[in-house]
Amino acid sequence: MAEPSLIALLFRPQTIHRKTRLLNRSRSRIRTLSDGREIRHGAAYERRRREVLKRDGYRCVHCGSARDVEVHHKTKRSLGRDDRMQNLVTLCGSCHGTGHQRVTHGSL
Image 1 (cartoon, helix red, strand yellow):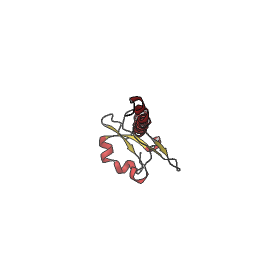
Image 2: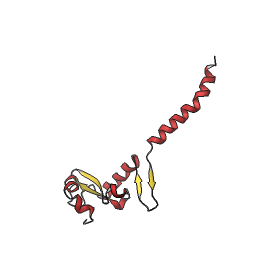
Image 3: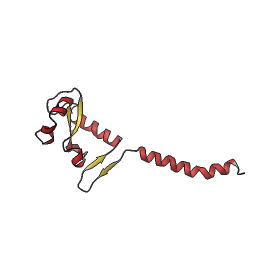
Image 4: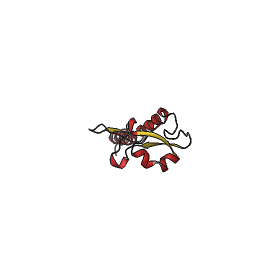
């Protein structure tokens, strides 16, 4: 039977590799496409969302309400996700729901 120290040496690299893989999976990612669009995931998107809220003064850019604010993509995410600052705007829940067509087509 092998000594405990030898067993520890044999299994240590695999354990480190597994931990590294888990850490890489949990990290946030930012991908920049050839046309300049940014795609952010996880913590990177959350930081961008907070930047947009701060830029807009935590108020809806349409009606000025500070209640129930959300970050809205001007260009629909399904048409080509873009998480750059110029594509994101702060809206209250009411304007986001009722005025979605108006905002998407650029009347703001």
